[in-house]
Image 1 (spheres, rainbow over the protein chains, first blue to last red):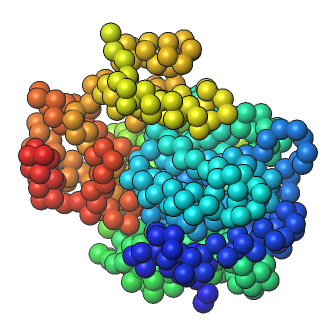
Image 2 (image 1 turned 180 degrees about the vertical axis):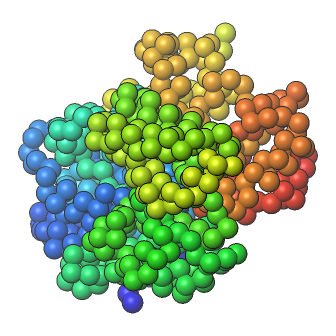
Length: 413
Length: 158
């Protein structure tokens, strides 16, 4: 398999700009700069690349929504606010191959006619931001960024902006609010950021992994990228796998790769017991039972058909010693803590569900509490500005439905 | 009265220059202020508000949204240990117990000498190297109670 993203992450000197260039780096940018701006967008459209942050929206289409010649500046924001539980893939790219991100951003900026761009990195990743800043400094010194873009008369500045600890700021409109200097309250859409985002100007927000795929696509062509993966899920994707496996880590596979192969081959198999359940795409997606994992492939369509989602590619594996109500309680506490409080159903619902679950795992629950969880889920779902409440609803419903007897036995004890 | 020293003032000017509008610099400036003064006290909010031309209450409102901006004094070493799914699976709470035993404080607490404070935190993006803990701009990963002891020992002597 061709590695698009992790080809060079094991080279210890890959963060150095000269080594990056020796290994073919910045050739994608060079090629893009010889193309028409809109032709670059067409290339990304044709590749079938979809947003790797969780939502899976087609990247080229997102770029295509940006209106041209509005008289306002256009902004590209890189979403490096990786905070979805179970997800640690962007961190690897930022730490080990920061120039790939800078190259991807430079290509995207050129395509979008953007001259000022930010990388919004979660504050906890400050040590990672040092590496990225060093790479940015190198790119400026090499005259790739700055008053001219790799020799072309096209000024481009890229700055790092550190978050300060808020899961919600990974939601794109919340990220924009936060970048503007406010509390990270998500905005109602429409207007979509493509039309009115950062400083009420056209804005594109793309995930780190998405932007890192762009140099390869431009360099090797859309057809080479779309030759990988499945009919509808093109290319490769990073999966960060953790929990009860012998080799946790981040792996790159073609979309459509079997989930059980990822667990057994790449991650070295389940440890400490037999497989019980898997969260395939970060804590916000429905859990799969061991039986449901059989035969499932890792692509947007197959996981949806199996009743879950690809999400961010954060795979968490549970062995059969784990008590699922306890897992759900940990997850519910997370959403209660991270709800921004703007919408009542989410602010109250996430906290209420978390309280019920804490009570239940402490052995103080009653069977009607289990049905109350469904009711709370119904009261939250689809009734809020952003998807955080829905992200709590999906684990609640799936855990309770698929492992109901465990919830009941906690009540009996 | 508190104020930025020369070096911090230079950094403040640099931060402002990165944004087309001054308001966008609020979060990095609050971060700078925390670095200089330890936490976002009402006095710090007053200072940043006056410096940037916004109401101090507005600055506090922003600060209270973000967990990394402290609303009370934190220790010199603020230990934030992840309590989310993968870390929890791999034994976070055994490490939490060790921190409590050694420092004799509960989550949210600070040692009397002001050296250590600790808190439970959400996913740090270290799920593959769980359990994990953040101390300032450092990560400590693959934690065990024994490692916790060594880290506290090491930081005590720094």
